[in-house]
Image (tube, rainbow, N blue to C red):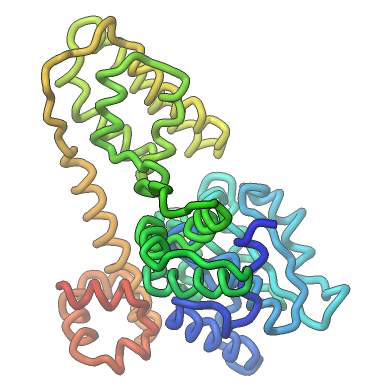
Length: 396
């Protein structure tokens, strides 16, 4: 049995390294139980990197409240019709096994947007009529399509687990297994996991029963390749089957990879090779558009093929000259702009609701509003600003 399942926390007291998230969850549950509270929210969104315990925390909530868990993955219903068919009965019908029920919608990033197939719009309506708490998990809670959902859900962020906490968790697992590993090796596993407790426990189980674990050479999260090395492999090496899986080891979405390739492709390729490479890049962008417009997520495999194998195969022979790859300015500008607007808008929305003014006015007057909120921690608590929003205010 995988240790990630065998030692999955079942109680709040067992859930380590996310104290602030736990505090907010308990507050949400108390508010939800107060039926007279008209301002209470019926949903929470647990967001954060993979392996930080979002789904585990949802199951703990169900266990601690003695509730039946009704679990759905957002990839199973990307539009309004599916939500009505599957989720609507769940939010209205009583639990068959227990007195209470908790509804988990895992990986909400996969639901269709507000204006295309109505997935988010329908989910918002179902939250309004729900009799039970709805828990939503997402890796990227700040994507544009989830903006309407952020207004209805209590936002609770889960950060990466510290190496110290990961070592403590692994030590406890080893104690229960009657095993021992060198402390330096545990530290090495913890640091290389980069805050992903699931990855750390998987590594721990792999090495724990080796005859001599000290000889194991752990690499950067299983040889994680940075984008510079990935580009070098694409542009300089011959295309192989392995190159199709190259981006799996790069901690970056394909959309950003595409911008890196677009920025540097003309430095490596010329003539016919450049024409073929740009043609492959345009086809990858075509599939990206179909994914977003039609929600055909299976097309991701084709986007990946054109960004990896097809571009690599465009050349007859590699350019042997050393090329210094440049970080695309568009990535930084887009990212900074999106982050700034998303946090500024979310703060303005909370302020507008609290003082009963329009959101547009709050955005226009944001420089003044920011100064007011920043100067008084009590106001920040009243508006229920999350850590990212407070950090944004402090940096301004």
